[in-house]
Length: 342
Image (cartoon, rainbow, N blue to C red; front, side):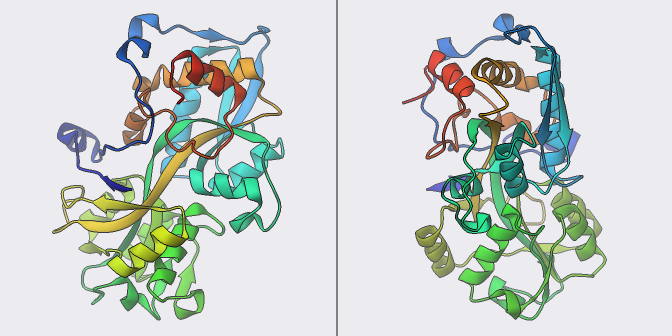
């Protein structure tokens, strides 16, 4: 599947320095009459009326997950009566899946690929199955982006051999995507000097010339890259056709086209790979009624989210990224009520 991401809200870029849109979700069509309007929105109350305190695992401080997670928690607190959601910093997908499944967190943000791997104990889960969680909703598309200084003399990803590359936090989805792209271009982990920092810190490293390249699975566009481009001249590297074909055949990543108007510094489209950010919830600690209330309270009020990636949290795309994953019973009831399932 090839997904294109043009900038669709130019005014938002001028006001907020970033904006993006996803044109091709894989969700079923939702009839207009089935989408709750503003006049139908109301506060949701927990079934038993008791106060409930839960935690949402987000990501590293300063990243998209962390910032967006704070806003998601605020919306849930505002629109689900007697619910207190705290968004906490984590190392994102893999940690969140493990901790939700182990009943250490109630909610978590994750890329859909490690969520699928957790069900089989594959990839970073090293043979241990984590399956006590359910899909609760789509968040936004994530795209792997490889950035270098414009004066580094680097024309392709293969040219990064022997260089200093920040691939992302250990066992994170960013690191997995980065290493997948590098391997497809013939670079194993011992062919370069790997750094394992969150992307915000990595961007500062590139600005200060402490690394030669940074790679991460990020929202499109991402603020740290836009800010970096104001500090020094940068380029974004494209995934070569043969490498892209290999990745699509061997992994669950999909082809993304980063169109040249997404970033001011781009002079042509860039081929990349991507995945979906999703919300998961514990099937042990969050019962069907509370799960239903959380989905209703959050997704019927996402217009209150100011983060640029919040635009993807809408009724038309709400089940994107759910293929192959168990649905949380509360989310499933909500999706069924609004005819959002095949």
